[in-house]
Image 1 (cartoon, rainbow, N blue to C red):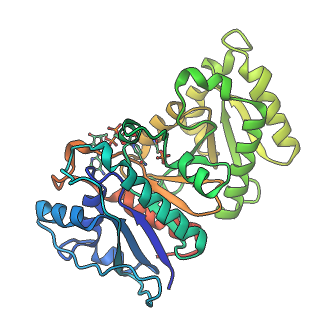
Image 2 (tube, rainbow, N blue to C red):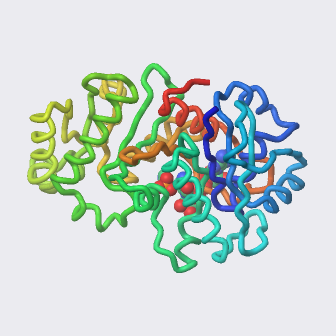
Length: 336
Ligand SMILES: NC(=O)C1=CN([C@@H]2O[C@H](COP(=O)(O)OP(=O)(O)OC[C@H]3O[C@@H](n4cnc5c(N)ncnc54)[C@H](O)[C@@H]3O)[C@@H](O)[C@H]2O)C=CC1
Ligand SMILES: NCC(=O)COP(=O)(O)O
């Protein structure tokens, strides 16, 4: 029976809460779990989970992960990787940054080795990892450094299943001032190629329709509001079309994100993080999934952050985590 890894992320955030709610004896997650055609292996610190379970009034009984033991569908095992410093819900500690990265390393290595069919990640706090002196911009980039590939971030909002909104990004975690310099013809063609191949194989669409945003207001207004559309994005789309990709644009981002366009699109390619993701989160925050395309392993994630303000309170909603698990299974060719 295949195993799916789930990293619990920042230990002071809501990752442990969400996982406990998913698999606690008292939770209503039993029906969801029972239908899963995999064993879940949760990576975290047992002490943190014990403390958080007490805080939330939950109990759990997940045995230790044993790669040699037979696995059982619809059950949870725990892979214990200790934190360096005691954890208080909602309080960040830079000394635990290495723990957060160790969870990712262990899960990614297990995926590469075939121990896990994929990994689902609960949120990490990017700031505190940098505060610990480690350059880190996100799972997306970190995992590509670990396992290889050109990572492309795509979020999908599944609330309207007739027209699921899929938004991929040409650049990921960059300061806004660095975005124009990073947008090159080569980057756009590479990202379009990865996005197109992924949609073809995952969704079985022979020629997915990809709408591409411009960078500037009104897609540059014929060069009067910026030239990237004329000098870089337009030629990249021409090249992509020549190789058979159904890429349309560059279109003004503000009119592209309207039903008239979205109802006929399989995916949107936005130029930068805050061009695409606010629309996606407005459409489906709490139920959406973040997928890293272009890696040799399967990785999906929740659509939200560490939510330190509600960690340990029982208020964390698990819809996105469940969606991320189902999405990882779908990408592995399994269904619940
Ligand atoms: N995949 C990941 O690892 C991600 C990590 N982050 C990181 O999270 C940290 C905090 O980011 P913020 O911008 O504050 O966003 P956030 O998503 O953590 O919080 C925004 C608001 O949404 C609420 N919220 C978030 N998730 C919720 C849930 N499951 N149930 C109920 N309410 C929820 C929070 O309480 C807060 O009011 C940052 O360091 C950021 O880098 C952000 C997005 C994704
Ligand atoms: N806003 C989504 C996000 O920043 C997720 O980043 P990552 O940690 O999945 O790379």
